[in-house]
Length: 262
Image (cartoon, rainbow, N blue to C red; front, side, top):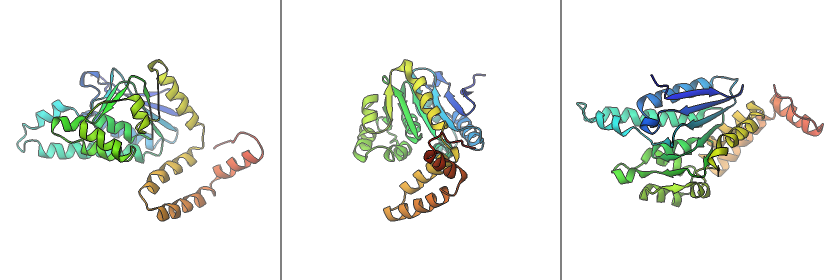
């Protein structure tokens, strides 16, 4: 059987999850969602892994949900109601596991990312694409508004830009995706993996205790009011500075040497 989600450990601390189901456009099928959720849980609990890269094979990064599976589910006695409820919830849980993963997650996009595939890009902490990549939330064209992709999209892209994507369903290119902050940057396809790995290695060289604290705090404070956010992050910094890595980092700066993280 084909391994539709490849796991590659290119270095001791960086793991690549590669969507490998070209026949379905690397869709988020039931199996793909389940595998992604399992792998992300394993990675979250593995102290040796510092950074995660989500990439793909083929010309489509991720086409979103598997429409064939969804159509088949309509043949169920309840016309697919329970299936659809479970599908969207399990996918939402998987997207949240990316945000909640203590390791930074980088999307490496070389191709088309649509609907829940676009949601996957938006859910990652960072995203680098090839200059030929394109993005869309085309559910409105099919009579199924991209409501769950909207959650990740609207939290990363300006409201007017997010609404335009959601209401028109039109495809945008990598340049526009960068302008609206759906992705961090784009490069030629031949340099994509190298650029992503360079970024991953740069992050992996930092204190992982500090990175983990910072990622969690970033998402939590974003949902708070200004005063509550400052109150919360002040507490986080007070705890952070008591850690050995903060002591070592400050000492190394003063002593003009490289830090030695545990």
